[in-house]
Length: 254
Image (cartoon, helix red, strand yellow):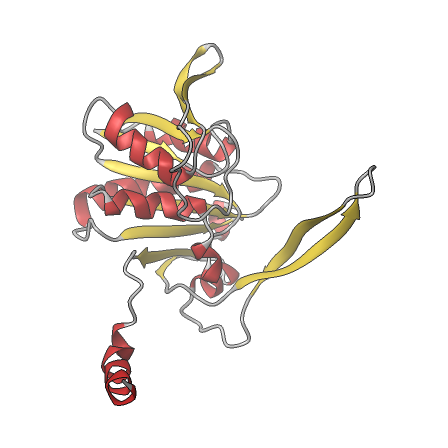
């Protein structure tokens, strides 16, 4: 089997390496990842400049391909050009920080998995709910179990799975739930600074917060209750439930 591994934290991120070490026990894993961090680039792709690809080494040995592009770029070029044989599964992660709620829209990690299913390859994105002192070992082991599940027991190959793992010891995790994308989002603030030449610049900062009307079966609530959340995600953004009403209103208005 051939797995394509990518992320948005950059090719030398520890989460990606943990994924590689674990999934390589079951499959031939090819890493195609951004050369530098591409967090929060969403589903962007590169159109107006060339994608540079270099062979990256780790401890003196070939490790994977570093791409001067986005996570979606990496999936596209990985499947189309860099893998000399068909890709059976794309795994994106392990992201440093959860990808839940509205933040999923911004996530390069999740967009890589979405791009894979657009191209007809089953995929999952996996994230660890912490931004510091990360231990990726359990999340990597869970990713290995999920890879087997997707390939053997999951018939909906055109729907990616977004997985979020609590950053707690394995024996404290209270289960695995299928959760919907909630409404948690980053509450932004901008730190205003001045450089040595008196130019003003800003750093975007903030924390992800649960919505006041966050529902109990959401991804954010699952993490809050020490559970692994698995959310099926799809690239069709159409709100089918409002189409009939919108059609009627448009017909009356125009």
